Image (cartoon, rainbow, N blue to C red; front, side, top):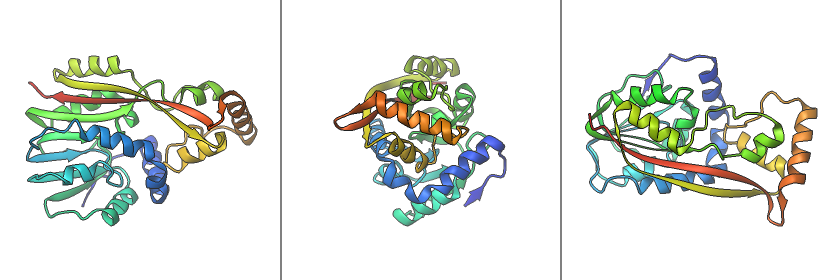
Length: 255
């Protein structure tokens, strides 16, 4: 395993949160699991020889890469605990190499394809990361990724009276950024999805156990107000709901 030591406060918190809740991630990450299945449909019929997966986590998308022949697969994640859980779940062949650390700082070997499922929303500068990853994609290689759009958790942001703590860009914004890098969009998809929870407390608990709780600075009084207001505004016969916007992209490094 290769470890990267470069980080900052924000990235340390992201890695710490994912490590803290790595043992509960799979149980609560049903949406990310569904996204992995959808993203797998964007994989080419003939898999390239050398592949890098950014943010492999517990291996939800990795299993789709392992199902097809490859010469070398690099698996990266910011959280060592997530990697440990992946090792317990999956039998990794000898051609797998683990690279632990933040993809914003790591140096990678040139590959034929980079993949990332439900990861890009964590990058503070999407144009920077697209340009950075492009350097490691061979000519005519691919970048295949999924991420969350700006409609995701909009009910929670309205109720909490806050902006998203992570950047959520529209499909058109991502397409423009891809074009600005000189890469070519091959295909994309936008899905609207709704999840239900018994109440707002369970919604927040689910997000927390994914290592992605969106409300960290709220006081106990503010949190009670948010939960009460959410329950009153978004309760249905199936429980309270949260909307999600799921984005998928397949990109070719045509330059």
